[in-house]
Length: 491
Image (cartoon, rainbow, N blue to C red; front, side, top):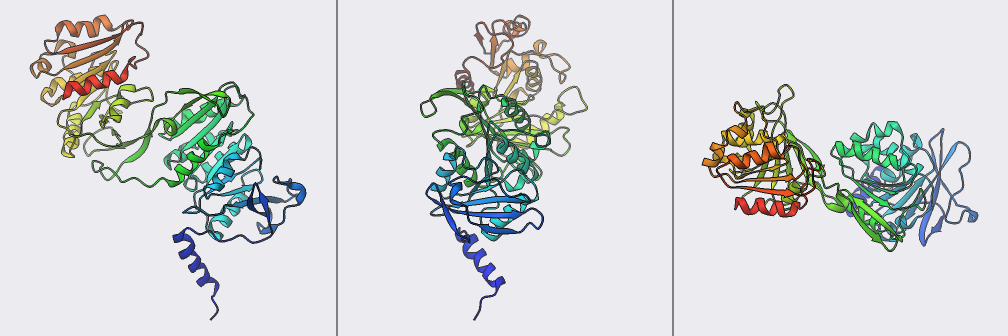
């Protein structure tokens, strides 16, 4: 009995899709760095794809296509990895290919199409995914103009990208304005740049937009290098990034979340600076790929103005300790990062758009909701600058619900309070709430705020003074020691 086309397709979907096999490619194959290479050509008018035999003169490279056509290449691994992952390059085929060669060894297919993104790119994508069973989410490796192409196609198809590695990338204004779409789809990005590359500003522009939208953006900067050389002599960093991104599994939603919520990311943005012998230069690296990442959830509560934001640890500590604050974290929130690493949740209480600050009743409702979901009944209250005054005010109204209060260069001013906190410390002292302030010795508010609280507070108070530091940076000199002190204080 003959097998019809529909039956054959269903059999392929079952055995190929579920068992991880890719359908073989047709046409005459050549070799690319020891792996089988298949060439194709797309007619820009008819959008038909036909096999093409690469000429011996091309070697491992590729010649410019004939007018009205696009050249396409796919290189096949000896054994395809589970899920048939692939990496896509959209410019400068065979230039600094060490990362692609490493990915081939790990079971990735490698694909290429001549510049620039248009309808032919979509045809090539469908050919590889629908007709040959490759993953519906390729990764991109893009150098210079190839980086621009990766961002152009990626922002147009943000649900069809597993990761982007852009090397000294170009960038269009249109792509920059749509980077939030990649962030919404949680696409991890790694940019590799030279510190004296004349288009380094592209990377910083993307970083600002992507980080602001909660996207995972990591950067590796080679100190003293320009636009060339591209890639890395040791490609493991790139290959590991792409492989790990592809293998990521959807995370289970935490039990404390209501039905409606938005997930994004939070991570340390402080750079580490190390010498890389393989690259023969010093490298600065920062972002979640190098420092780790925490999930950030924002959600509304019924009857509460403003959203609640929860930064979740990888594993909650015993007793579900948490920090309650009213100012959002940033990449330099060093003490919060230390507490996250120790299993604390960090909760930013709701601040409405149409009020001068937090609303006491809505903070009470947030507290009741989270403690009802298993959070500790005594959170740490924390704030930076004048935001500290708001958590003091809530603590004064709820002294039996406070583990301790922590402030960084604090100003005790509050829109919540009828009586400003510095004049109303007795409820906290009566409840024996410990207070910790970390201040710069040059902070202009030290005398009128922390020193004044120290005079008036009848409870336990610890002041850590960082010599020579002003109001900024807010980050303490020794955040790990401060976090350890908080943990010790509340035990």
